[in-house]
Length: 292
Length: 288
Image 1 (cartoon, rainbow over the protein chains, first blue to last red):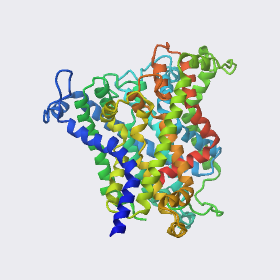
Image 2 (image 1 turned 45 degrees about the vertical axis):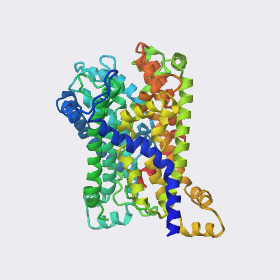
Image 3 (image 1 turned 120 degrees about the horizontal axis):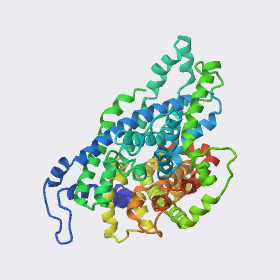
Image 4 (image 1 turned 90 degrees about the vertical axis):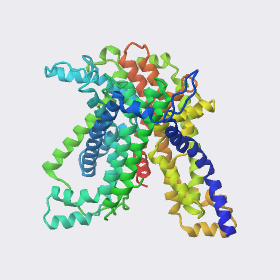
């Protein structure tokens, strides 16, 4: 009994520094956002007062919030499947004995270690009207000029392309590791059975990669809600909020308009979305993918 | 977070029946190389623009003269030396705290059996989902109350307890044979000595992997430093670069590209030199 009491004291003492920081910068702010979403933003002469669900009503009536939310869903739909499919393709290619394999793998992975803020500057130039690289290329074929980032129809696609380019190579390395861990005997057995390469991939390799796909998927979903660096550089949410994502809107409301109560309300929505991801991951997906 | 991957299969001396040969292999190589070229295009372009005079920014002629002018102009136009120093202090500070806090917490979670351990672990893992990026508004308020806004420690604080690092180290510590631990205790080592003499040396690959990932992440981090800093003395490179390229430079892409390359250079050079180490670190950090 005293032994266990000592162990408990030791254990919590070891945890104390990390737990204190986590409590101050993760647990407390999450709770505080929730509490604050029921109060008004304090002004110079008026302190914050309880307003009930007013902030939430304001949010539901706010067209920019809905725009940010739908943009974010399209952004997620645009980036997640594309980057996962590309990552898988890259891994399959790099796993074979292709020419210049090491260099190719390096090329795919390089965007991972570059600062998003820095590469966004280069992409910004690519997309610049008249002068930019894309314009010059399409100009060669006589296509008319497009203002990629200035048009509501194309700006979100441009943002999606940059995000896919940034993260596909990162996801590739997980697929590559998983592919290399598949026992060669499976390939031999499939070959004896006369399975085509596509059948082998679809029936053997792809199912065995399921745990990796799940892992990559979760990461991709989280990234879809936190990748906003390139928006600050490339569009600042524009044109007319066509590229405003949820986290970017929180940033704008919180630090552009200084409406902290409303920003806290929006933060609660973001946290709820992230909690939903966690719930889906642990409650549902984990059970379906562990059949090895 | 766990992507369960079994240990790597023994290097096959046998040939893979599905490995393409002849024409399919050529086609596959061509496709892979084409995609690789697209993937390095932004970087390749930045190198082109940065090392040539402005008039060649969009004119790709082989005979264009090389120059370092853009770099000297960028370096003179903004206090990049200070930004480099700030980023260096920032990533060092974050990593040092992360390692100390993470090691202590991971040791408790891996090898101590005590009341409330599972609850503590669950509370720690919550940070994997609720990342500090989502809590910018409240964290800014906290740091304002602490009177720390616009300092380098303010950028570091929300990140120094890392659930990801604790989780990674816990998994590694759990693989250390209990016999080693017991043997050290029989020799009369205190718990802290056991940690420092047995666990930490055995976890060295994990420390290196985590260190590389952490340094890369915080070298590149942008949104939070942008919010919490507003002076040259505290600003890291990423924010400095943004201030530089969005201010009234005119739009001289050659100079912006030079600044961009400068900002990315330390990580990029490290990656080119230790490519395998980098890739394996990111992989190890993700898989555990």
